Length: 127
Length: 221
Image (cartoon, rainbow over all chains, first blue to last red; front, top):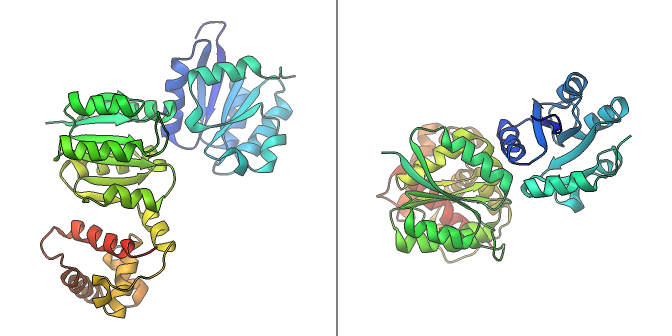
């Protein structure tokens, strides 16, 4: 990771998606995976340890949901942006997804390098 | 000999995830990775696949590219297998995919791709001519039903129908026995009778189960 790369924490309970997200980040200029978490609680702890600039957050997780984990992370790390990533159609998203402090929601099937770059460039600056 | 696999999937994340999974398997040789219908057809023509692992909806139309490619493969390489990955359990797609024969065909929900063992089992099964239908897909098919009249199924006794309906949910003989409060031996006898009445005496057992279930599902609307 170069000094200018955006450090990213990947949160998903499925190893497959963590590995796939790493593959996407590896070919996205300016981003670097710095860690992984398999649950919402672990996401909160890992954010404390790693201070990532961006968290890729699955919604369905064992224990607290990705939405609750996002609320906790945003409350204690206002400089960390969270992008929700799941398999809901947008119209089926839980209402709380909209006001948990995430910068946005992306269907996993649409997660690719150009899309991530665009979301990051167009995000509302956090904190 | 490793199994030569062609992967076709337009989602970057799923494609790269599956690529990473398969590349670590010594008995799998990932010979081409495609993102749309045209590149898949070209790989079917040139990469000599034993198995094509494909999404249903891909560019250019995002509708049934995977199913059409499977039909082209059946003509071009009749012995090759197909594992079809579907985002949702869709009865019309499942039956369309399986209507010309279930040999070497697997229909899996896309959520299974994260389970390496299930994905590999399906690839290996279709490579040797077997069939796999995702139990969740079967459940959906059974749930969306109403009964037709003229069918070989009309010859089944009510008890045999019950057994077949449970098989269609993906249950094992032991689970069927438990659900109907029968012995496993009794369930086996019912299953053999079902196979005989449906004219499925020859094929291997796993294969007959799939066919019997398909007949049952095909008569539901």
